[in-house]
Image 1 (cartoon, helix red, strand yellow):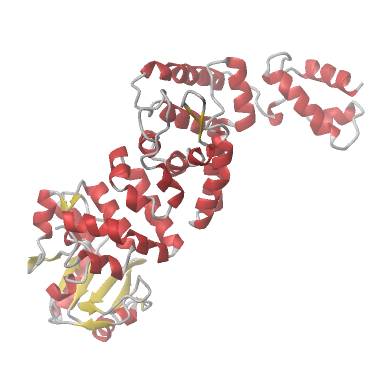
Image 2: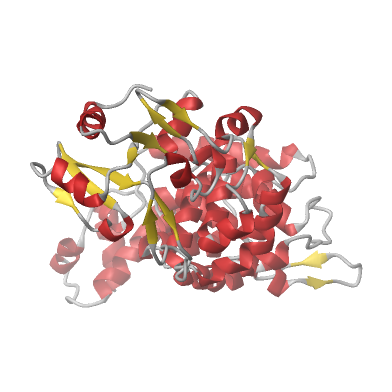
Length: 440
């Protein structure tokens, strides 16, 4: 493994003092997979006070000292060096209540979550792999270190992390690990919502539909509003998939943008509450977008999502049934109402929604290709879509004798509607004439 200079400096400093030291965890995993490692953590037989003494000439970060971690600041970056340790119980489901320092790297690796993360490498000693992580990588297996239930009980976030590792690295959980992931998923209810949201945000851009389906029990644990969609028959000739499978395909079909992925995951969260069947047994979901918006807002608020992301996602959920049609005048209205960014997001979401029904009716997507072409044409025409784009402004209306009150905005909005509908040209004289008539 090719190590950065600052990592080699730390290793050399510890080794010259006769302390064994290894690069550990993700960097070893990535190296064995042929990927370029980025984060390098070190573990060593040196005790925290010995590490501090060896690197006393550098700024130190001691926030993790009680768990045996000393941060050494080199070139404005922190290199974390942790003493070999074993851990006690995890009362808070995140941090060990106590740690015990040990001399052996294998004992240290025994406390880690998965075998593919429980490997260490030394430039002089080579690979330490007591649990067969390298073999599991080669076979494409995700396996917990030791008893999987114990590992997940220590920190239930490892369940979601396990899903992410499996998805990212193309690994399949071994039967015992997968069984424990599903059985122990309710323990995630006790986790910090911020930690869960952060892990979901790391996972969502990586998934394909099959991932969301396979790990549905885990993914819906922190989002129970989606659990009722699993296996839900939509009773519609337009949908070959059950509701959750449809949602999974839509989520995977939008670009790997976090806002779009969340919007796709939650876009039909209002369907189960609005489900009705007509006299022919056909299912309907009248008003599901409007009903789903506050549910999506509640979910993201509970998960402590940033306000900007939550607002954008909720808006897309609420508006995803406002169809974008290949009609020039209608598209101008949509662009004027939503703006370019949201219109583009709606187009991507609606295209994925229409193409993820499982019916095989690809001709339904033709209209969206036409919408795409029309939007590109409108962008190229420097189209007037907002009040700021009008050839006159409030100052011009004041000069016409308009009072300095809300009627200014009313008139400008009225003029904009006519320009957007192409019944009035965006020309100064024409707009002033129309404004004069509006005032009278």
